[in-house]
Structures are given as C-alpha cells and as structure tokens.
Image (cartoon, rainbow, N blue to C red):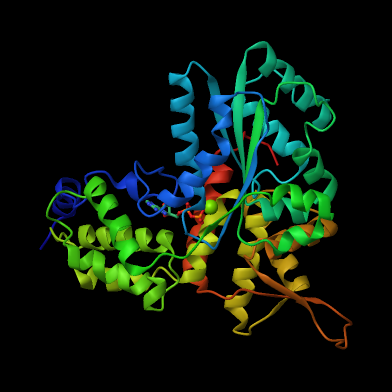
Length: 414
Ligand SMILES: Nc1ncnc2c1ncn2[C@@H]1O[C@H](COP(=O)(O)OP(=O)(O)O)[C@@H](O)[C@H]1O
Ligand SMILES: [Mg+2]
C-alpha cells in the first residue's frame, strides 16, 4: 500500500515540465511579439514625436480587434520600448496602463494615472479636473512625459459617457500654450460603442486606427514556439504539439484566432503532463486541456479579476441558481435572494436592491452574463439572467477570486 508520506514525497519531488510557468500567465509581457511588427511600426510612426520633439503635440491612436489578438500585449511592449528609447535620449517618459474594467469612472481613471506616475496629488477631495491639473503641474516641474493607455476603452465610453471621454480626449484644448506632456493610446474591441459619442469627439479618437486581425494557425505556431522556449524545459514539448494547438485555434482553420486561448491550452496541457508525472507534453494532454478552455470562459476570465466583490457574489448567486434549476434563465429575484444567502455565509453586508440592479447591468455590459426583460407574466415583468458557458469552469474561477478578495480585506471591513 502507498503511504501518505510516499504520496507527499512523490508530489514534492516530482520534476516538472515547466522551467518558468509564469511566462504562460495572461499578465506576462512577452519579450518579443511575432506578427505584430506592422502594428508596432505604425505606433512608432504616430508617437515618435514624443522623442523627436517632446511636448510639441499630444498624440492619440486607437487599437481595435477581438479578444486575444495581442492588443494589450502590443501596447505594453510598445510602452516598455518607448520608455527605454526615451531614456537613451535623456527624456523621462513613463508608460501608464489603465484597465477601464477596473477603473470605470473619470475620477477612477485620473486617480489611477496619478498613482502610476507617482505624483504627490491627494486623491481625496479633488475633482478629476483638479487632479489632472495638479498632475500636469507635477509633470511640468519634474520634466516628465507619459504615454497613457486606456484599455477596454469601449467599456469606459459606455459607462462614463460623452463628457468624461471629451475631458480626456480634448485635455489640451483649453491650454493651447502648455507643453503637451501626455499622449493617449486607446484600446477597444470594436468601434460601435463610439457611436454614443458626439461626432467631433469621435473623430478626434479615430484619427489613427490600428487594426488587429485574429491570428492564423502559422502565426499562432510562432507565438507558441517563443513561449515554449521560455516556459518549458527543452525537449518536453515537441513542435507537433504546438502545431496541434495552432490548428485548433487558427482563424484560417475555423478557430477564433485567439492567442490567449492558445497559450492557456499550452499551460493546461503542461499541467496535465505534470499531474500524470509525464516528462513530455503530448497531444492527448492538449486534448484534455481543450476540454477546459471553452472560448467564452477564456474571454470572461480576462474580465473577472476586475470585478468588485459584490459583482462576484452576484455572479456566484446566478451560477448557483442556474445550476439548481436546469432552466436557461434565472429570475433576478431568485438571484438576489441567493446573493443574500451567500453574503450571510461569507459574513458580508449585502448591497441594496438598486445597487444589485446596477451590478447586474455591469455584468451584462462586460459580457459575463446575458440579461433580458421577460414578457409580462403573472408576476409582471422581470429581468431574466442567463450564462452561456460551462458553469463549473466559471464557478471555479469566481470562487477563487472571491476568496482572494475576502482574504485581502482588513478585518471587520464590509
Ligand atoms: N504577437 C504576439 N506575440 C506573443 N504573444 C502574444 C502575441 N499576441 C498575443 N500574445 C499573447 O496572447 C495573450 C493575449 O493577448 P492580449 O494582448 O491580452 O490580447 P487582447 O488584449 O487583444 O485581448 C497574452 O498572453 C499575450 O501576451
Ligand atoms: Mg486586452
């Protein structure tokens, strides 16, 4: 019989196929970006004035494309390289990356820019405009420039609205004579959300649009190969394994062309190999992995870390109700009731009804849940909530995020 100690020792001592697993995590910024040279070149054309004639103009451009096509990675890599190059020219240029799923209002966005630049501006008691002016003063005094990326900008447009967007985009219109120390880069999944804006603001943003197409199988192979070499021990992942993933995901082979899903499949396949104690990652491990990387779960897993605690609790409530009912829709009343139960279990104060409603709306806007208003039933109209993806996979992620949020909480806080 195998003793508990043997099991422990074999797990602890087992060699892994991974040399550096973090390279496969979504937040990792890659060293190189195969097949995005064209986009990087366009960015360089637009923002080169920040190095050749700093302060002369505030530039704006928009990256557009679906999920997992490298928009965020390209912005970060560009920002990293631009900063390094500026330094060589004796220019202090900061790169600021704001995710609008987390920072949703104008106030939050400006406060986040202030925080990342490290300006000593009080974040309480000031309006966004006052904060921004203080920031601009600080940058002037210390001779600092910044490229500010607003990622998931379509979400900001739909939540913060026209005036907020106007404020950001037309920042320097009021002060034509000051040095233009801040340039902006916007990232969006599609341009339809911008039709909410007034036409001048829209045309201001759409001056330079850089498109990102879904990846072809061949391109995904190159991206995967670069990651493999950094993440795995040599000889543990053969080319045919990468080719298999690339063919599953490549847009020219009927896939979504999503590099995030491809890299995640490689990570999960490696973990499956480790779990079995195998020294090689096989096609069979990839098959197992793919059963876990449902397209929509991958898409949503990008949004989940930015949800607030109570949004996660409501999402968990919706999952619970849908699992119990085996019907496609859950009534918002049922979800709210379940949410209150969950709050009791976790020992947190539930939010008021109107706030719950707003959270449900946010979850819908972010594409995590579907919500529609029912036809008039005998209890009147009601909002119906649905989730179009495997609930188990989603639940696992939601649970671990809730736990993380609750652990990080100061004792006694709500
Ligand atoms: N051309 C590329 N080269 C290397 N890695 C890439 C490339 N494109 C995307 N990735 C990786 O794929 C994942 C998804 O890319 P991301 O930039 O987050 O996509 P998007 O922001 O368009 O949804 C990230 O892990 C990213 O590092
Ligand atoms: Mg992104």
